[in-house]
Image 1 (cartoon, rainbow, N blue to C red):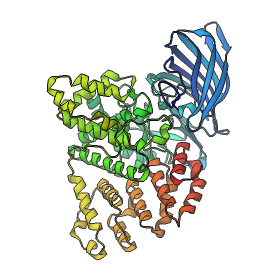
Image 2: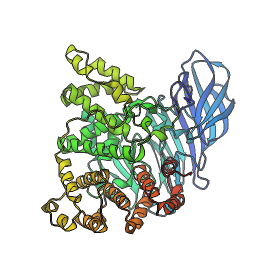
Image 3: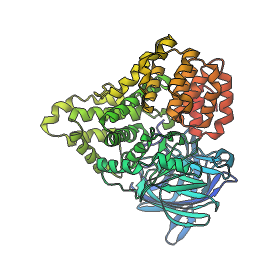
Image 4: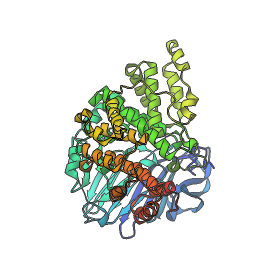
Amino acid sequence: MRLSAVDPSSFSNADEVITKHVNLDWTVDFQRSVLAGSAEISMKILASEIDQIFLDVSDLKINSVDLVQPEGSFPVTFNVSDFTENIGSKLTIYLPTMTTGEIKLLVDYETSPKASGLLWLSKEQTLGKQHPFLFSQCQSIHARSLMPCQDTPAVKFTYAAKLHHPEDLVALMSAIETEKRKGETSFEQTVAIPSYLLAIVVGDLVSEDLSAITRVWAERDLVKAAAREFVDTSKFLEKAIGICGPYVWKRYDLLVMPPSFPFGGMENPCLTFVTPTVIAGDKSLVSVVAHEIAHSWTGNLVTNKNFEHFWLNEGFTVFVEDKIIGEVYGKTYRDFHSCMGLAELKDWMNVHMKDKPEIQKLVVDLTDLSPDDAFSTVPYMKGSTFLRYLEELFGGPSVFDPFLRFYLQKYKFQSIESNDFKKTVYEYFHEDKYNEILSQIDWDKWFYGTGMPPIVPQYDRSLVEVAHKHVELWKKENVQEIENSVLLNSSLSSLQVVEMLSKLLDEKVKFSKEKMRLFEKVYKIAETQNSEIRFRYLRMCIMARNLDALDDIFAFANGNFRMKFARPIFKELSQWPEVRERAIENFHQHKDQMMRMCAVQVANDMGISI
């Protein structure tokens, strides 16, 4: 069922009224694990007149709703109804008369201890073990568990916030800090954002400056390593500005999250969240930062109107991320990065989407799905491949880069659908010389086709092919022949090892225990801090049914709850008959350390109830 005309996942009547600004006043209550306070919501009525406003809520305790007017405030009637699993409920606010123009509502409420967009960690679950920690993750539709709102990316609003929090903890938000007192911090976001970019963190945090507008935040014992790992952040930002245009967000800070954070990164304006799993010690995984920087334009400025068009956020962002990588490290690395992305897409198709053609499409139908249920690498990798195909088709970066800037300028501060992008391609490339090129684009196949991308660009595969030579070697069954091969004298980069492991998994290459021990020795698996290497190697151990590796596998699975890692590991453990019961028991022991969106998807993957 589609919940509204604008967004299938939102009850809000955003075609009739839109939020323009929100003032938040929150008390952070660690004892009860709730945010308690109020949201003052300023709205503009688009319809000729209305007498009801629909907002999205999820597990909120609504105490009162007041209509705020110059002469004073007075209470209005409200009702919470239409609970929908994995979506939330509808808050209906009844206005006293048919109303036009602008309106302001004051909602007094508190969140639930089990709010899907918040995770409350005990001090024992933090690195420092001294203080509790709170963080949010609102994408895709979890802002409704933090505040009553029009929880759709079709609506953008500015916000201000005052947080009351423990005096010995630091509070941060996806906004600029405007005032700080003991136990009270205020923020302001003057650039309009969709609700999913609302973010809050409260914890024992310290920072290191990386530049005049960039610093990295982390727990005390991690901040030095994080600053070393992310030292190139300013370089990435400079390259992104050259590609996309002016940076409007004033600051670009990074926050290294606890291991429970479910994503690689989250592009919250002014404060990117990043998983600790990208700290590899050799900067081999910092492309995540390039990705989140790219979101400052693709996603945060130009936004998908609803999550059926999520590729407009993520496909464009991977495309720009790869361009940044190319600017910093060279075109060969840009292409290598793209090839690795396709390998990830193929793996995701094989592991999670074999029997789900409906979510293999670039433009998905969310009529009967929540955005979380449809989440995959498809919008990222299939979307970026489509854009790279178009770039090559129209004549390369010298032709396509100006189009990209035209597109970003045309739609900045707006929310759009896939057909808006299509129309803009025809608008920009309107000259007769492009007619034949335009006729070659099969829009329906790209938007609605299933499976891998219909066309893959001609990438430079030189770095990939070196890794694949090692794959061919490890296909041999004679361990001594492998050990004596001169190929092992040529070392691989960390990312080439990742690519090799991806190919070994894809081709289901068989490994005996002896062969596995040699592999671990050659590539120094036990010594690596690279989580992408460890993730793939441990999945190889699962595929080989290596019982000796179980403790390492569970230690990795319980050491971080990034969905990219947690979902395949838990799913594949649950498909191992001798280990299934232990995997299920382990999941139930640790699910409360996961964000709900992660726990729900892992449970679904394992075929169990949460």
